[in-house]
Length: 435
Image 1 (cartoon, rainbow, N blue to C red):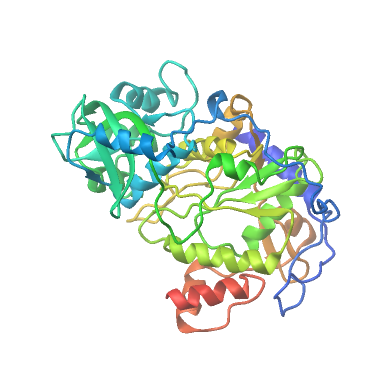
Image 2 (image 1 turned 60 degrees about the horizontal axis):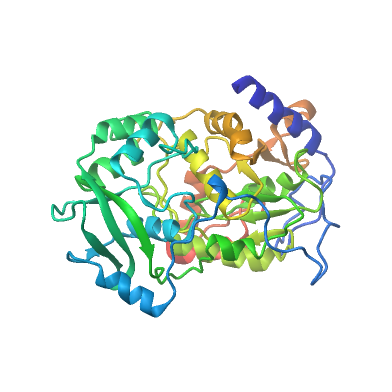
């Protein structure tokens, strides 16, 4: 599988790279930084002519909607509660929102113990056998939250949902970490989250959605976002959890030229803005960088939306989670980057997952998910030709130009110049204000 994945990626690298330079992007004051490649620049939808409402089938066959909008029905749901209210953490509030709006379809609530165990062991939902990357559970230390109780779930003073508790159990967290991440060491950020942040009891049951959190960034539920996407073209999802720099842009815009993507298709840049690993930039700052970049690019092929998802850094299994979520939002294709959702040891700095592990997992289950994989190009910036692929750079003897993440952060803090080929000026300005 690994060899075939690399072979396919190399084939696309060859097909997508051309040497002549292209014009600068808006806002760039430097010489051209991109190697020109055949792009779908002419395939833009005239105003009013676009076929709307994405037609991709939701995961499990039906888009779940647990939200109650009728005021009387909301009042009745809250009246059923027979135990003290539960205050959600930010991570938990993200899960409640994604369950309520159908992003986690076909789930209709937090997993019960038997479903949690089956998902860990088989990466599938018990009964339906539908593929599901990672468990979705609600943790607590409260011993009064037991089967038969109904509890109101609050976040920052607002009731977001009610949960009819069907099961409560004390999970084997070492087992959960081993199955979810393949590791049990605290050097892994996901293991630290489960073992140190999550409480000792999990509760599962059916959810009734009553509202969504008030956030700085706008969030469209799957049904609403689908209405903004074309129904007759491919929709290529790009997942990220960091500010978008020039290389990221190259990856997702060139994905529209992948051999398995129709001409005239669009890319949905769909960043996660919820909690992630400890040293990542906060979600609000990330959102602000996306907003300034959206204004700078002004590209009709690029759609933007924000996902209140809490990262696990689970590598291959999280790639499956991201794919099924984006399928529920109407996407037909998914860009899988090298070492997607990967992380490094907090002690040694070594990677927990191989560069192509996530791509291999995605390709293995692509047909079953009914979602095509677009492996990300292995690109770099060269002095002679701007951005091109690693293979072409080696063949032509082009000289790579590099700037490490550590050096980028140092320059950012010091107020020193950051080259246009590495980062968008508008993004840099936002980041400088946050350091």
